[in-house]
Image (cartoon, rainbow, N blue to C red; front, side):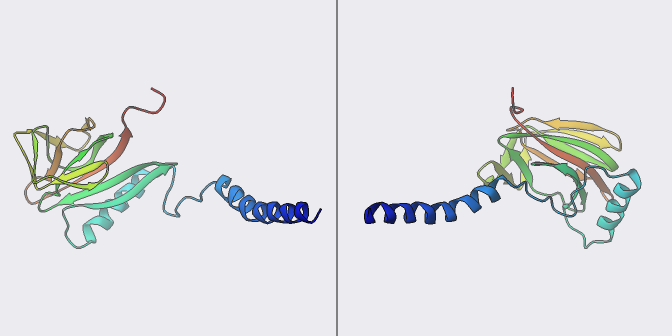
Length: 171
């Protein structure tokens, strides 16, 4: 009987440790306070105005809306181009919200390095195809395709970007 009591105590102790973590694992994560599911046009214009007041940088990113693991991001680009990129497992949808610039797609990543397990970055693209973009234009870069965006000289480009898993879940 003493051995059974010890086993019961061990089981109860283990359950006391495991059950709270199981409950916490099922509690939905609280979204970050800056994550919204709706943002008006004036709010988006305010994000662009905020980016314009920041110190110059090739890329300033700010969340627009999101849910779960999905985020639409405002990317404000001015000055020197941000590094070229390749997303191995995601396509990238882009909508020009303001300004103009050029996206170069395809070709080969120059000086490519792996920035994380599913993304690569490089200094530029060799042999890609340039496409001029203006406000209202939309493009999607398939997974695995090098791409780089540069604002037109002396100006800026603001894009809404959205990374789309490839293949889309359930397909």
